[in-house]
Image 1 (cartoon, rainbow, N blue to C red):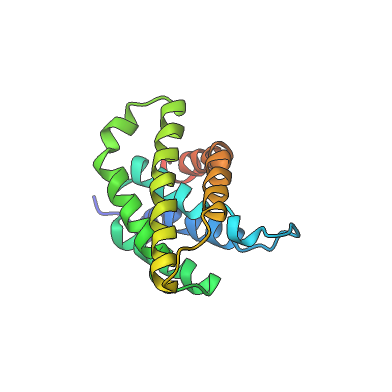
Image 2 (image 1 turned 45 degrees about the horizontal axis):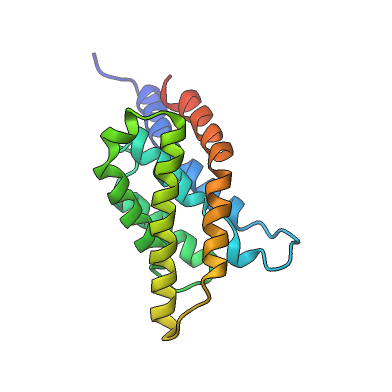
Length: 170
């Protein structure tokens, strides 16, 4: 039995959910918050989403999708093109290689795993920005961004679990 047009459209929409939710998180991350020096330490919501979807739906969060999301984020923040794209693709690759471990883990181990991925991402971004500016960038903003992102992981993870259940388990 072949699927009707509406069934195929519904399936396509559901399969776009991880991309759409991640784009939404990119846009939420751009909302200016009136806190002094917030911009350099704004949490990497995009990385949380790429981490989650790579573990739970790797068929929908492929390296090309992670690259496009990173490029979109680079364009919207006005930073050097490719830095976030590189970071997200490397993170996606690292998570995908350890996916079986993460799938069998408790939430606490997922959180610890994310903290390790975030540490690598912070280092990679700091290294890229330092290389592009030909000087060692300050480490504190990168560390605070990493800590803030790790602290936000449970809340954003809860949102992603809800989205997963709502759109992709139907």
